[in-house]
Image 1 (cartoon, one colour):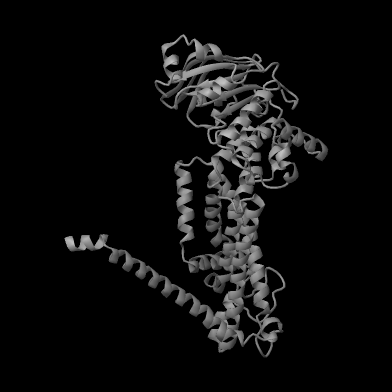
Image 2 (tube, rainbow over the protein chains, first blue to last red):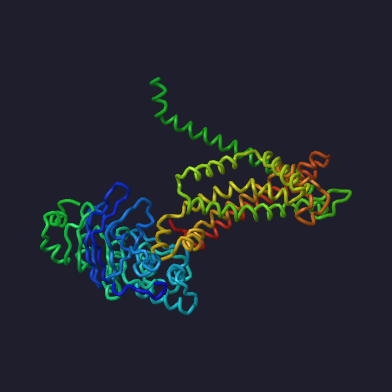
Length: 259
Length: 286
């Protein structure tokens, strides 16, 4: 468990009877979900339904919130990520996260990407260079920034910043990538670029994406789960969910009767 | 009554508000400019090589004061900066915001920042000059100044740290970084501009302070300080000394030097801020 090469046996993820309380408020109620490896899974649902909260339990970002209490299990490749022996730092190395608003660090593009490798002790310039270039390529932003790697990441456009954040997460060599409404602050062209990117990434990493945009879920997700008031109402293949929802509430949401 | 209300909404009311605020601005500008002009006109002509760099003999020199001032800055900021920045890191990154002890500490720093400097001077006199037995010394004066600027540094550093967006900290944690790495590699660099500015402003306080130094460094104007334990003087003290003991021209000349000193510190703060903006690439961005 102490080796930096440590990885989960597989990136298939399973949440079992997962409940989460913020003080007296029950944000998640016995959520059960299986995420298949090398797939894109979309979490949809109205605001405040618990989908982002659920996403944050998958890399234990909820640990940072005081007064947050969790029951149930999350297993990745069979490993309980809430077990005492779990190293949160290694967990987050293997389960990367991209946020709603691009949050590049106020440093150069290169230093942003090299942040995670440096955290895990990689210091050699050649190694770092290789990781930085590979990650930027993987996030299809290399061509746009290759001549200004030493310039500030904050000078990039919003869409470029978000792809930079994806590259930054990829540099940690994650097995799972969690994205929390990654395109909600972006224009349609940047959004399309990121959707294309996710489609190419899923062969390498398992993707879980929270989205408000139902068309987006329909376009990119293999599996979709519908959250409502802290519960999963229904989950299944995206096609089934959109064509033949079994629950009336799913149908109402998808057809735009509420949301 | 209704006349007054109607007037409040009228064009004339807004016009008169605008004129009143312009007059107020004019008064403060005139006051500021006339002080600076007065000092420059009275003092510049009296700046001689002997006064600036000469040996203190038959005619006075501010060379000892210049060295004393630099020594005081080094001691005061050198001691206060690490302690102040570390305290601010604790307050903003580790402490629980609403814990009673933390509230007390915050209240104490706010109160300390408002204490008249002569009280710090008395404290420094009793502790360093008397109790420690150092006599009048630049070290005692510098340490007293360090205590005086500590709350300033703590407060402004804490504010700079708190203004670093939570999203950036989350980004760091989400990449597997721990708390220490997040603080030192992400939060502190993001706040460095504000922290540096606060240090330079603290230097300005040190340079312009006089009450503390009268009671701790001894106002020995004629001997070049050789060690931190020497008694000494500062530029601000020299002005007081020259004005009190029959050297009005030298006093105004020293005021010019002090003014330029403070001005260049502020210029430095401004330039550093610009430099940081450019480094972060914020220049020209909204």
